[in-house]
Image 1 (spheres, rainbow, N blue to C red):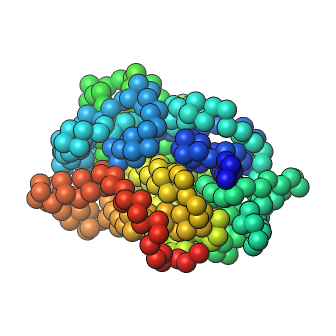
Image 2: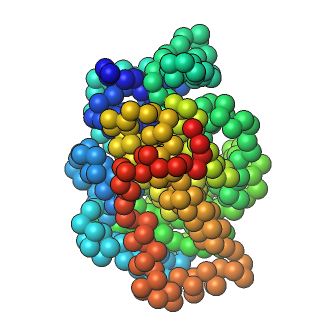
Length: 398
């Protein structure tokens, strides 16, 4: 039958992971990325145990533990620093036997670029649309500069503004979260900033996070409720961020103070209504292109990595590509739908202000250990379904 070609649109975390996994599954792969150069945003993320487990399930070792910092503690505190709850992430991680890694986007991108070394990567390559040949099943992607690429499968991993998704389902509205997110990376030392620590601080309509990236490097993020029109076009500066968290725990104020203004990024926080149908024929979606979610659970990258692992497993040796893609989508649908919904509900609850704030704090402070552990363990566990599902009836059709 010969080797088949996969076209991956997007060189983000999901796209690069999918490219590496598909090559290992026996596919020829090429990647197309709209950006003229690959530059990871100056921020960090958590590759939680479920994502590390997904990588292990397909034999993809990125050496993340050497590139980042293993999560050692996780605390939630009030704005002033009083403990609300210690979350049992370390105990769950030990029981699972799979680490969770705190890592910068640039370090994770570097690991994925090494894993995809030798795979053609076309930059400044913006997908416009695609067509499928009904006789051969081959898919052709057209780019805005007039070029074309042909393959046996097309993976839309092109993020929130996915051109592949737009052709599949038409124009859509995004759903704003009701708050802005500020984030930054900076060298930082403080007696309450310990190795492997994640600490969240909750105020009224505001949150702040300190996350250890290892080597004395801090990733911090802050949120503040504000109308979408302002958060999507925020033009404030470091002084406004500092005012927003004035009077908070000393380590929070210090983190903002030592960060150069030019290193503080602002991003709107938004998602979309969950998409039931991800693909058609030899085309499917992955990561944020399929199921964008708010950041409250820190699982956006994790879900993209899980997607890539399941997709590669389904396509390994598949004789019917559309059937394998629909099986991938069916396997991923319930898991990602739950994560999108949970991310939004947790986000709404954690951004509580005024009279709802003490209710939020009390809810987490007094939640039974067994219930909290069960919720967290479910999100941290990657349990792929058996490949036998490839031949089953699918929800979305061919």
